[in-house]
Image (tube, rainbow, N blue to C red; front, side):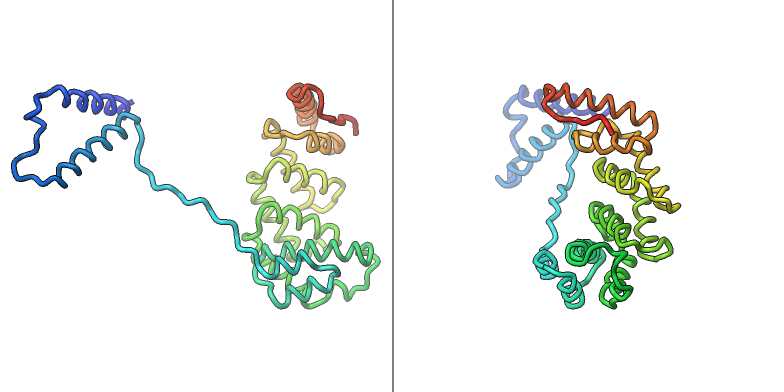
Length: 264
């Protein structure tokens, strides 16, 4: 309130200065032209800022996207799991890269060798893979949210035991960040974690569902609603009711064109 009154007073004062005799506005004899320009310029800036009720703030530059590394290129082009391990051994650096590499390695193992349960124990004991997982565990705080959620699923697929340090680190970090995850990431956790029996896994799923209950109005796509409703046995009655309301809202907003499957 005080700032608005001060701004209005400055505006009136500035306008009144134009109604005074011209001589009163002239600078004293001997003042240079540069000084006159500075004085007039400052008056205009001050009047504009005070009238608008704004303050001078330092603009924050838009953050640059991280530079694409050679490891990123090699991971993207990898055709077999060994390609990932070789690339990591030569170019691996941080936790976020370790998450990306581990996810791609797991995809290639499933594609080329089938399920992890059928693999030889030495597959999980490769020193390069262990170093990748150790880096991920130690630098988990630097892993992006999307990668963090996806690499948790990767560890579930790999069948990493609940006592493993890397799984514990990822689980703890997910629980720590759960309020900062997007509704889609929360939906993935609730979906992928359905049926998990581990204490930390159950805690993660419950925390994700709780956040969805609080932030259900953020949900804006039919796919997420459908996935959540299909796992209705894990959802609370409150969330199910709200998801059903969201179905109606989405159908109404698009004229009924979106195909939302409400049935599990």
